Amino acid sequence: MTLSRRELSKMNIAGINSHCHDRGAGLLTLSLGEYRDYDAPAGGRLVVGLHPWDTEGWELQRLREELSVAISDSRVVAIGEVGIDPLRGAEVARQEELLREQLTMAIEAGMPVMFHIVRRYDILMRLHKEMRPVVAWGVHGFRGNEEVARQLVKAGIYISVGMKFNAEAVKLIPGELLLLETDELPEERIAEVVEKVAAERGESPEILAALARDNRARFLANRK
Ligand SMILES: [Zn+2]
Image (cartoon, rainbow, N blue to C red; front, side, top):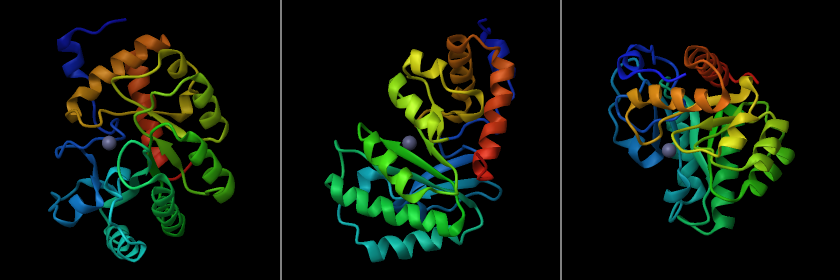
């Protein structure tokens, strides 16, 4: 089913977008460096973490100090995006060290974590096995294949899907683990993401929108 532009603009998009860098987003993701200088409007909620691209030159001590400040801010409801990207930032071993620190702090603070993972899902799965986190984990911008999707699902990790995705993989994500996002696109474009993903999964956009909203609330409440 395809919605017209007018129907899309009528869709209630509040509470759906799980990962967005648009300053107008209800749930805004900021890198630690951006957070320091950001004066958030009242009522907005934030996801803050050291992005893998920014890992060059960060010492563990400084990371601990700055992330502690963010964690104690009542607007900050999750840690992210954190993860591994072999194409940018510090070398992978160093990225893993900085990631571990943030994951440990998230567990201590009882906060969910949103990941940015490029290629190295093996590291994510190894950390998951080792840490057995009681907090919720989610992977944002998922474009992996069916095999990777199956591994994440088996581990109970939420999978956030945006405008571009692997159609076969997206079809096998169980309803209760699916999140939707616009990433760098404006918040309101979430209506298009809902429509695209719904068409691929053979679901109604209205039902998928409600599901994604429920899942985001559950993710942020740290339930799996
Ligand atoms: Zn992002």
